[in-house]
Length: 286
Image (cartoon, rainbow, N blue to C red; front, side):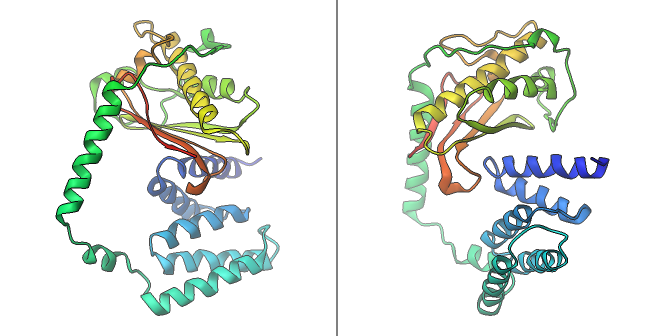
């Protein structure tokens, strides 16, 4: 595999996992891919088109759609050309009916009303209540094979300005150890941890039929594996315990998504956790 091919593969994997955590960041990665590479699998084109169309960026989506059609016809990209041709017809219709970018129009139509304020305050109160008073976790079996080999490792994506977070940087070695452990579970198809400043994005793709409860258990086990790897690297950090995910999460916010795919309707569990909070606030259960 050439260096550029390897770079493209790594970026594509990051974009796919980031779709479950932050679509805006995922879209930026996809657009960077199209600016610097020519993807060879149709799913990359499909994902970029879907995210652009969702944001009413129809002209950009149409450009990528045309590129996919051209490359599939040249046998340079695997895929079903009729699928992209159908997308092209839909995008052209939307451009004709709504204009190439309707985003600003949508924003202008929104008017803040009293019930919006009440709803926002209510949601904030509910999140605070859940973070403050939810019950602690039971013990989970986390075997950190090879954690003694960790010696720092390469910094990934972490550009925090918080001195405490900078002190406890999440490294590729830690992520690799935790990811190897979570993939030992039969339900885990893929998993990823993406540091973004003071936030950790946690994404797990599970097999069909996995329950929401099991998805949460896997997420907690993944976090405990990472915390164990962090405590093995930073001797002053306390590792995971039966009633704690680990001290490393005193310094990071968590955004967690577990699903059978990267599309929102496939998610089986979504959660967040503030710095220093004891428990994860789980927002969704199918």
